[in-house]
Length: 446
Image: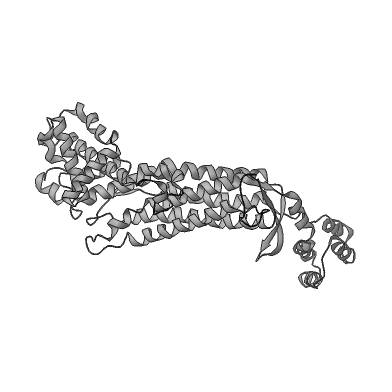
């Protein structure tokens, strides 16, 4: 019963556990331990490949067996690390001791003191966390984001020729097209994803205060700066240098800010779609077994877009704190980053929940062309911009003021109102013909 989802404090691991389960491989306590073990093992192998004199006789054929320590690691193995931590009261030291225990089992403890050689905890943490974040974003977040983007892109294409009344300040404005409005969000997201691709996933790897003091004093003839650069690069990260004891987190903050911007765009999108649904521009596919309201049987609420908006807001709040807090540390290091860094998976999880809701909501949308056409027909006043622009071209006196006088009387502006106005204009028949062809349905620009 202790592990029951109904007992979870956070909805990430409770109500939405099914949607976020994939992230356990990257952000759970077990995952963090496994990533730490992975970095420690790969570091030991890298030392063997220099080779350090004391590691020259280590059998390289055993490298894959070493990698199996983290590749085959399960929660029960991570529990052993937690048991060691109860004694050490230090999470990374517990990982070191766990690996040394495995070295003993494998009969290679002769080389055991080169596990965690010359390192401080943050060399492991500030490599493990960016690595887990990078793999989570590329393997879980981006595929789902691309799926949602693909749906928006296909809707932009499908509805590119459907005219629609625009609303600026909530009031009727020059017509647009349904597909174009989807295209706006498509392009905004694509631009942010382009920027995401240029971002660096950083790692700090430089000893107790970032200077590789211990490495240099033990082996002064080795270019440890080059070694650190190459080792971090082998993990798919970029080494930050110089640093203090910890990663300065500036590049990590840029990643958080980028995803936050994408989420903000999606919040904007959710609110627009919600509004279009309330205007009946879209209907939603009905599931006969679902209930929209506990009191009103007719209700089909836009809950997927509301859920997405709420979770995107939660994600952005945490991303903002991460990006503002992590780059700030007293002198060479304080511990405030440690507990905060453990929450990197939280905003990613809320973002994933939101994307799943968006995906579901978009799948329910049905374009209601009759409602869109009716709204256009009710708002012939929006062609005033077109008419006064043509009159400006023709050097007609006071065209803006003339159309303002026509359209702001408070009376309804209909097709007939516009037609009568055109007939009374002192312009050529060809210009009148040009103006008669303009309707709310055709005045949609490029």
